[in-house]
Image 1 (cartoon, rainbow, N blue to C red):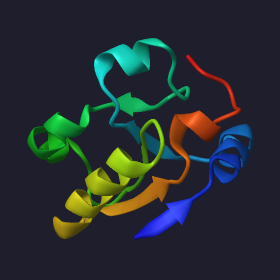
Image 2: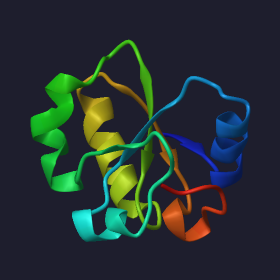
Image 3: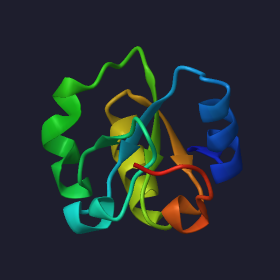
Length: 98
């Protein structure tokens, strides 16, 4: 599984790079703030929402610490999606939040 650091994601955001973020945390966690532009799909719903995703795009998976996003990334990889896990999750995120 490919991985990316929180700092690398922040650089991509600052450079206005076209990135696709998926936040797999629960609703109450996301209420506290998420990375601008991230799509919220709770981990338990990834299986049911994956038909809405585009296999030609690469997705960066985000959660609180990196564990749930790693599980989501592995799951999506098994179905042919291109995914990267953001290590450290929102606990290590120092960039902007919505």
